[in-house]
Amino acid sequence: MILQTVDLVEVIANYLGITIIPIMTIILGRKVILERRKINKFNMIRFINFCIFLTLSWILIWEFLYETTPLGGVLNYELVKSMEFDSPTFSLYSFGIGLIITLALVMMTYINRWESLYYVPFFIFAGMFIVFLLTAIAIFLIPYIFAGGVIAVVFLFATGLRLKDNSSFGLAIFATLIFPTLMVAEKTIVGQILSLVYPIFGIIFALGYFKLFKADVVE
Amino acid sequence: MSDFLVSLTLEIIFLIFCVITIIIILRTYFENKESVYIGLIAFFAAMLFNSIFRVTNIVIIFGARLSFSNIIALVIFDIQLIFFLYLKKLKKFYYLPIVASFYLGFGLYENETLIFFISYAVVIGFIIPVILLREGRKTRNGLAFGLGLFFLIYGLGKMLEIPIVPEFVPEILRIVGIIVSTLAVLEFFDKYLFHDREEKERIQSAWISKLTAKK
Image (cartoon, rainbow over all chains, first blue to last red; front, side, top):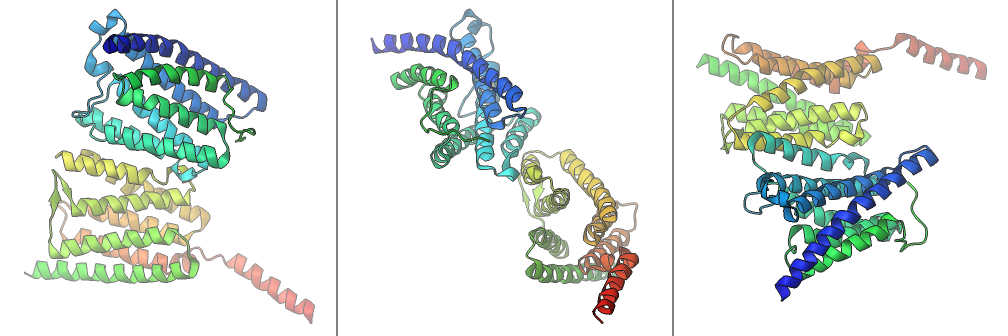
C-alpha cells in the first residue's frame, strides 16, 4: 500500500515538476529581459537565478524522459542519469546538478560582493569536467556537489537573513526542499512529499509572491 | 668531480642571491605593507627550496609523475601568473592559477604524461615575461620590468637543460636571472633605466622657484 502510494506520488511529482519548473524558468527569463529593458542594466543576481532554473528544467526533462516515458528503454543510463556514489561519472543529470551548485556558489559570491571569487566555482567545475573528458575520472564530483550544496545553502540563508534579501532567502528554501529529492531521498515518502512541495514553493517564488522581508535589495 | 664542484659553486651563488632577494623584499614589505610582496617572497622561497632540492639531489615522487620539484615549479608558475594578474588588476581571475595548478598536479599524480604541465610551463614561462617586460617599459615600472626579464632568462635557462647544450649554460643563465631579480627589487631599473631627467629637473626648478618666491 505504502509502495503504491509512493509510486503514485512520484508520478504526480514528476508531472508537476516537468510542468511547473519550465514555466518558472520562462517567468524568470521574462523578468530578466523586462528589467534589462527598464533600467538598461543587467541584474546579475536575477540572471543567475534564471540560469539555475534553466538547469533545473534540463535535469527534470531528462529525468522525466528516462523515468516516465517509453524513451527510458532507449536512453542510455550512463549518459542520462548516472549518479553513482561508488563510481561517480558525468552524465546529463549529474552535470546539471554540478552546474546548479556552481551557479548557487557564484550567486553567493555575487551577493556578498567577493569580486575575486566570482568565477572560482566555474573554474573548479570546468576543471573537473576537463579532467573527466581527458581521464574519465570524476572523483571530485560527488564531494563537490555535497560540500558545495551545503556551503551554498548555509551562505544563502545567512545572506538572506543578514541583508534581508528575499531572492537569496527564497532560493535557500527552494534548494533545501529540492536537494534531498535530487540526491538521497528520492524513493522515500518524505522525498516524494518534498517533490510535491518544491514546485508549489517554486511557482510562488518565481511569481514574486515570496516576500518575507519588506524591502528588496537592489543590486 | 670538478664538474660537481662547479655546479655546486654555481648553485650556492644562486642560493646566496636568492636569500639576498628575499631579505630585500621582506624589508620593502615591512616598509610598504603591500600584498604583492608576500607573493614575491613565496616565489623566491619556492626557488630557494627548488635549489636546495637540486643540491641535495632529493627526489620524492607521489603517484605517477608528481614530484616535489614539480610542485615547486607549479608554485613558481602560479606566482608569475598571479603577479601578472595583479599588475593588470584582473581581480576576478586571481584564483585561476591556483585552481589550474591543482588540476595539473592531479593530472601528474594520475598520469605519466607531461604534455599539459609542459604546455602550461611554456605559456607561463614565455608569454607572461614578454607581457611584463612590455608593461614595465610602458608604465616605467622597474620591478615589473626586472621581474619580466628575470622570468624570461630563468625560463630560457630551464628550456636549455637539454643534452646538446653544455651543462654550465643553463646554470649561468639562472644566476644571471637571479642577479637581475636582485637588481629589480633593489630598484636599480627605476633609478637608472627609467630615470626621468626632465621630470626631476621640473621638480627641482619648481622647488627653486618656490624658494625664490619666498625670498
